[in-house]
Length: 395
Image 1 (tube, rainbow, N blue to C red):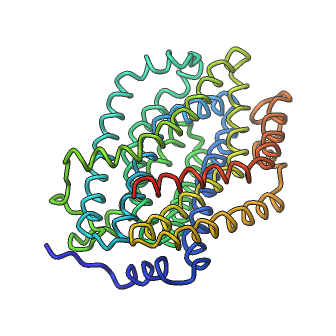
Image 2 (cartoon, rainbow, N blue to C red):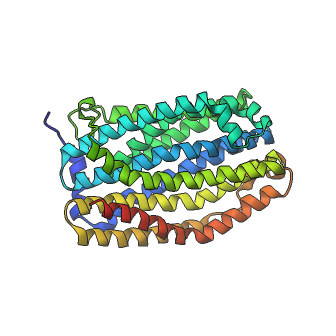
Image 3 (cartoon, rainbow, N blue to C red):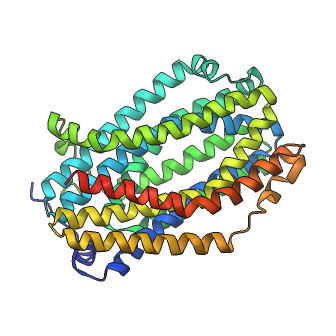
């Protein structure tokens, strides 16, 4: 089958390889930062809506979401590794390998998500006991847990779809799709909880439906089997060398994110000894602080895609210039964002009465935001360097 590349994709590829470097960096990195910021706002919104039910529901959602983050680290790592490979092949105009990587990654992501979802649902009670989940939270959130496990299939697919769009330079499309997802999520959660007075299960269900919407958009966008980025089962290749290279990039990212998320699960497991409301306070803390830290890492991810394209096309000097531009733009952007952000974000949780009636909520959420904001620029440098290292290492 003769593969085709859309004219608009070729124009963006030309921008990244030959055009204005700053323009190219802003085209991808700015929307990626906004995209990740919206994702974190989803989590804040979930907790804010959940706080209207009762404090125990906040604790349950926080606890189960942290477990979910540990599992989704697998899909995130796979998509980042695939995105780096796709960008390198795309920069080298090796469209056959682009097509192979796209379709093989989709197959691995969806297949792996199905296996994980089934196994984690079947062994759910054992997993929750291992995580020292209080019976009170299990009773409240068991069905919530099962829904978010089913949602893994859509999350894994969407992660790969976003990685493909990032490699194509479609940062604006990523942001647009996420805004649509946000509108669906906010509307469904608000209707289910605020109007129909449903519990935490419907919050999980609204998340699943909004992720399904993105999955359907992704399938439609990649529907042309002749397009270099299109879905085509005949391009699934499970050869050993390719799988080894893909997981050689992906596994370190999986390990990094899994270890970070699992550490928070351990903290929650210890926190339940001080009462379930402490877990809720920790959940608020994590959500608020992530508003300043997560966008920084996404800028590094977006920049790595452009750098990898230039390395793939043999333009290593230009790749270094892109790195400098990404680092500069990222630090200026994050510094500006922190300067205008208001750390007093707890009003949406109803202060002491909705999440936690004691002082720990104010301490965890307010002070954590300020602490992590102060350290974000340093963390940003580490994120960028890690992504650039991966891009260069696998040339």
